Image (tube, helix red, strand yellow):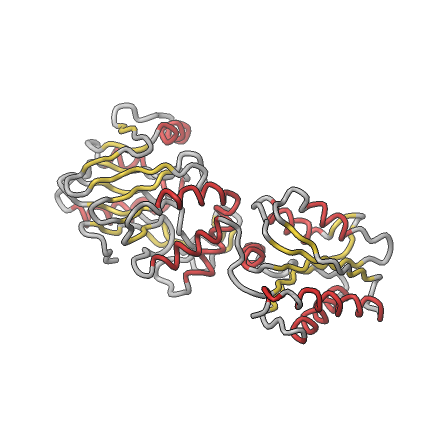
Length: 391
């Protein structure tokens, strides 16, 4: 891969073996583990790769290095998919130093049983490491999304090595739109820490940036404001589009029929962007990402064991643990006897900021009736009356 930044080379790898990233997220198009080399009077390697791909990574390094030896490996983030080959690197290049902050070396000791005291270069927030023309400025970004995370700004090339920020699922040899898999990655991996991401973005806003090099996904070297704007919206929990998302779970099909009717009624009210997710069958991480994309969401489910149907309960938990906010929520509940799903669903959002609720309540007793059909039509009118959801 040819990079825009001078003297900077890509030495990462593509992973098409892993089917579940972090054991949770489906990655049908794989994932990349990115590592970079900055060649100057001194040489810095920016992060490592997953342990399983150490052989390929070392080969890639040697091709770029030629007969030279690296002086540093910068460890920006300690998750094993980026740091697992650190010890191997030091054994391969014993004259090199590991660059990290105090928290980095605590975690290195936990993973490897040594704090690398004989080859460590401890940096602070704002510290600068000179390679020659390239000067690396370290910017701490704690809890984006681990406490030791830092990003690196190369003042010579005006490039940001952004750790997990601006990353996405998908290997680099797969051509696919950036936004969908980056959004799914963000809300799955980083989304809980919007405040911290926003703080990091504010630090970066003071810099002149010409390229962003993340630890997953492609290098970003054109139209950077588009990516920065998206990240700002994600970090501040702002919707990206107009419309309504309906998330539902249905046991015998009656709730599903109610959702079909609501979608039809919304479209008749002029809401042209209506997205429906079946929480039992659809990829959970996609449902989560889309819930943050839309300004209004309808949650439709049954009472089950005097509680919320499991798929819906787990989905709401995923939203609230990621600080779901700045949205309007409507509920459709179904129950043959003692329906309590709507009340319990709303209770789950009590700690979420800036949540408003639709005034129209839809309660279905077993199957759709004339009364519940009227309630659904009224709900569609209420949501459709909001000019913000018009596409």
